[in-house]
Image (cartoon, rainbow, N blue to C red):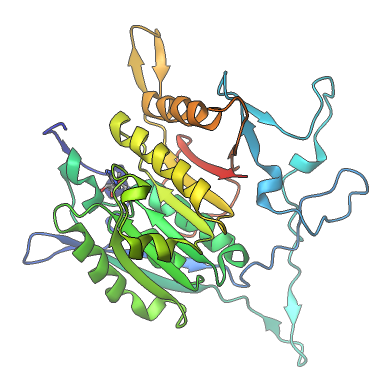
Length: 338
Ligand SMILES: C[S@@+](CC[C@H](N)C(=O)[O-])C[C@H]1O[C@@H](n2cnc3c(N)ncnc32)[C@H](O)[C@@H]1O
């Protein structure tokens, strides 16, 4: 591992009302708004046949497949010769919200719920301690979870490589259980636990949050039996910004493969990441080597037996931003499902 100091880009986008603590850490305040009417998403993806809202259609219907060879993104709904707009890929239409009046004729003002997550973290670290910082992927995934409250409500969620725990805290607004995991370096698990405690007033009162170690480099067979047993009813796996080092990426893919095979209730895995581009002489182009490596390793494992076992899709980032950060074009949200 490199001994270079690294700093999350996020801290240059807002000061997050950061204060320094006596122990040398920082505490930042991540303000967010919840939608006025959670999931009042009247606009549904339009079914191509009758243009009626399709009740079974959700965000993922509009997700786009990633070609295993070219890594190009393809729409799943159109034939090759069809140049017309794919109706299933038409962005959700939101009903224009007309001003509402109460029974006395007064205007009903939509109040958005504003709140703040307080997170203790480091401002810069060596590469092997990047989990002590907060990265844009964590906020992108948090936005996706807020926008899709219905999907995550009362579900059991496992977060991998949680860092200081922000996305797990957001998951706890809606889920019935969150297992927040990472490796135990630099006091990371204690820091997550303290961040979970610090924000416990925000969580759904019925939600149980546990913090435990899950190291991608440990094989599923060697997990403690207690961990294996608690993973059994996990329904969603989430991970933000864990694709930045080839060794870790390879271990991460093996972890995903085990979880996809072993967890009977698992519906989908969501992975947020930021493609980090570098210019290489070999390619004479800017490439995102870590992202490309992830796709290569994943497709290799996915097609190990000559059949494609899981679908890998790119979720369009058309959902709103509830946190303050730059939704840069390098951000990506992937979904893996059966
Ligand atoms: C760039 S940080 C992202 C942290 C957090 N998810 C975020 O987006 O703010 C990468 C995370 O991957 C974790 N990680 C690195 N190696 C790991 C391993 N072998 N097993 C599990 N997690 C690992 C790090 O500890 C760190 O929390």
